[in-house]
Image (tube, rainbow, N blue to C red; front, top):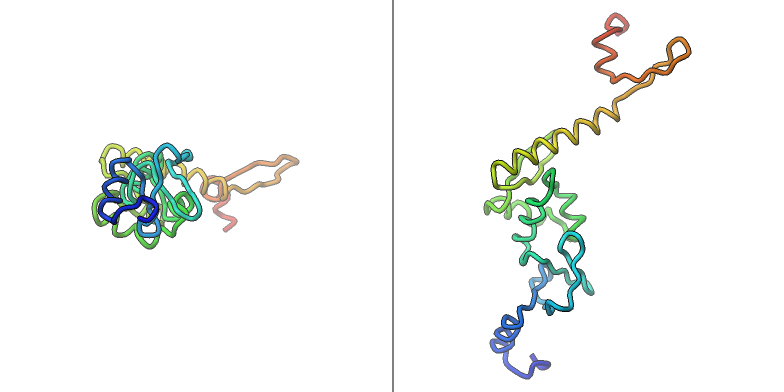
Length: 164
């Protein structure tokens, strides 16, 4: 307030008039002028420990990130992008209806509220996760001088049930 040479309410009016951004961390205590910020690919700007979002407050930022994601987002993914622990706020954001929460392949994923978008994210997530799991579960068999790759399930079901 000393810098602006005015009281608190006047300072808040001036900052609003200038369309200043407020930080989504540190209780919104930090402000930034719009022509100063340089957002990253996720719409986030970090300056001296204060984090700002192109989308506004934390709830709006999480909703925007989740909606733009092709596969929805996990707590770990949100934490990595936002640089704050998503466990501390994601439940309340999901409860408010800003994002949907579903358990897919044994872990919670936050998806878009729009049903069509959520269905597409769900399909993308399930396809992405299952292909990753399939690659991890491939095994190589050396038969007659040739290396052949099988998934465990295919090998067991198709040819060698009697070996088990």
